[in-house]
Image (cartoon, rainbow, N blue to C red; front, side, top):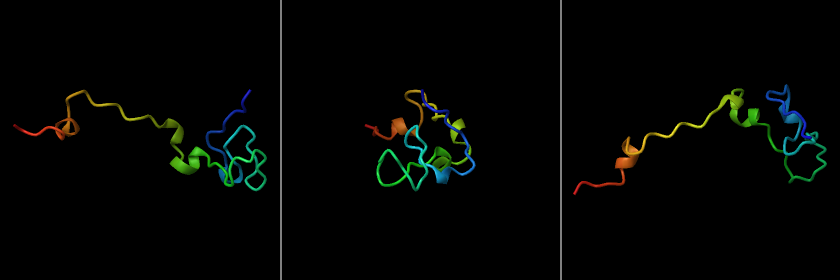
Length: 72
């Protein structure tokens, strides 16, 4: 069973977030590379858990669709 992932830890820079061990940054046990994995709050900011991908535009709408076509 995986540990519960903290959404906004007080000091995320102190741990490695690459696996379920959450090792101290200066004493990683898993050998997951030479650098710790950052927590999403460090990468994307405090609202990282509320992020949703943008919705796709309707087919045929917008300048992205018309950019590939030239008038004949």
